[in-house]
Length: 192
Image (cartoon, rainbow, N blue to C red; front, side, top):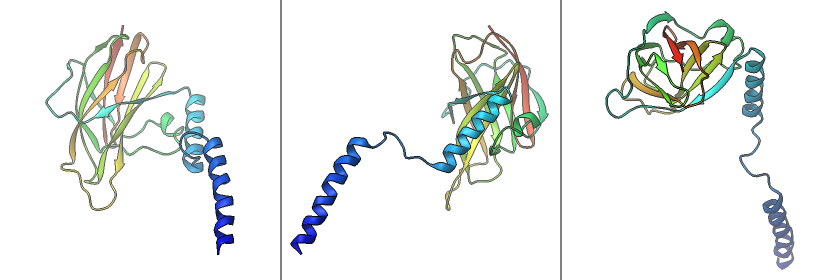
C-alpha cells in the first residue's frame, strides 16, 4: 500500500507544479462561445458595423435623463442588414413603450437613454445593451437573458437606463433606433 501512495505522491506533486507554473491565465477555452464570438466580430466588421457593449441597469428612482428628442415609432425587429450579420439573434423586448433621451450629445460627456419596455414573459431579465454603429445610423439593442428554473421577474414592463460612454460617438448627425420585437423607437441625435 505504501508503494501505491508513494507513486501517487510522485505523480501528483510534479503535475501540480507544472500546471501552476505554465497554466494559461484567464478562463479556459470554450470552443462554441469563442468561435461564435469571433465569427460575429468578423461578420460585423465585414458589413461595416462597429459594436460597443454598453452598461445598462434598472434605475431605482425616477427619470434620470433629460428628454427632448423627437421620438417616433419604428417597425419592430432587427434591421435586415444587421440581422444577416449576427450569428445569433438577440432576445429583444416585445415593444419599446417610451423613451427619454436628449436630442444633443457632447463627445466629452456620456449620453444617457432611459426607456420603458415590455417583456415577452416573466422569465427574462436585463443582460445589458449593445450599440451597433454604421455610418450615420445607430442601432441600440437592449439584451435580455432567460431566467432558468422557477424564478420570475416582478413585472413584464421594465424601465432601463443605458449610458453611452464619453468618446464613443464622433461629432455628426445620427439616426438612433432602439429595437423592440414588435415596436421600436427612433430619433435624431446631433453629437458635437
